[in-house]
Length: 434
Image (cartoon, rainbow, N blue to C red; front, side):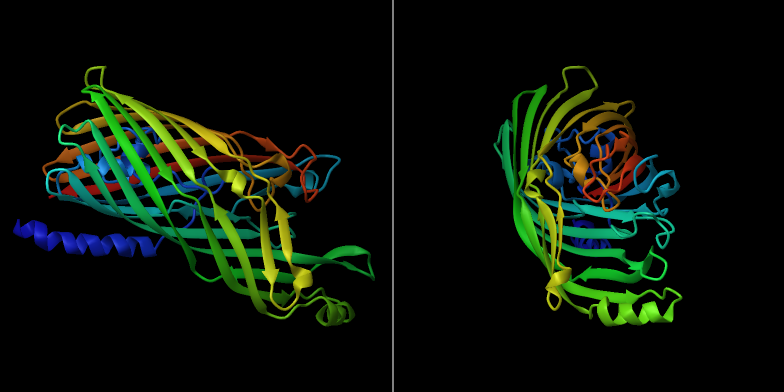
């Protein structure tokens, strides 16, 4: 008991410190569903299983069954490979081929569970459930630089939770309060027609940077286990709207023509000023069924639904020069994902996990572009779990293939071509059960 009391406060502080270092990634839309290596190893099919502290993200009711003080800390390293290729007969044409700048994104997660009495559990979680980074290489010459050069959305959520189960373990409910903070930066160049050559030139670099702003919401879940081999789970996470304030700065780009530069400075260079915008985040609903009817196997199937139809447009208002206001039509639709996963203990210490997912994109073809080129995707995962005494180690490899997305000549910005994307995700969590 002495070790338990001395170790937990340090781990609890570490939970919050890890959250402060969150960075961005890119999931369906701009969600990040990979919030625990065990769950990711099962393809994210974890709503009914929910048997480690990451249940606070997947289904908070699951912590009611966790009857020991425990912590779980880790993250997911995400690497993307994206190629844009223009097509003959439409802008920007084959010469517009481009790739993402190489980045490794590591959204962290951290969880702590404290049982109270026989039937109640308290938990606290820190995770990054949404994020986005589309940073194009050679962005000063990238053919889509007048639409977007680099977009960066970072979020962090802190979630205290409570869950209760019946004494016979057949039913559990839980709920959590989510505080979500976020920042956004957007970079792009502004063009003009050189009146002396009649050619398009870059004249201004615009950078929009938000403050760290926040909203609050909740999550709730339930688990029903009618038999020893069957378990149903359902989980809901509420929508949020974060209202951002921030600043816009405009830097003139020399054209090499002093007369043109003077005209741009006098007529096309706005002053630095405040901006405001609201970004809607979707509600999500998950339902799953898990069975242990096959000896030494847990198999689960999940269905997830995200309310992306809330994202109608991306609007940015400028305090001083409202003529510069942005309104980018998005018109997203609600989307679904289908997940199947399995966990198989192979020895007393080792588990093997397998999973697969089909995830629909919410983004209509008209909105596909350099700011966010989303598409339907399929993924497969393989994971290992190791337990020794109080220690737990979880590792997962998750390969995600995005269907090629052609704008079909219908892009709202008349920037047309095909996006090819793939991603490799490596998840790692370390846990300790006191």
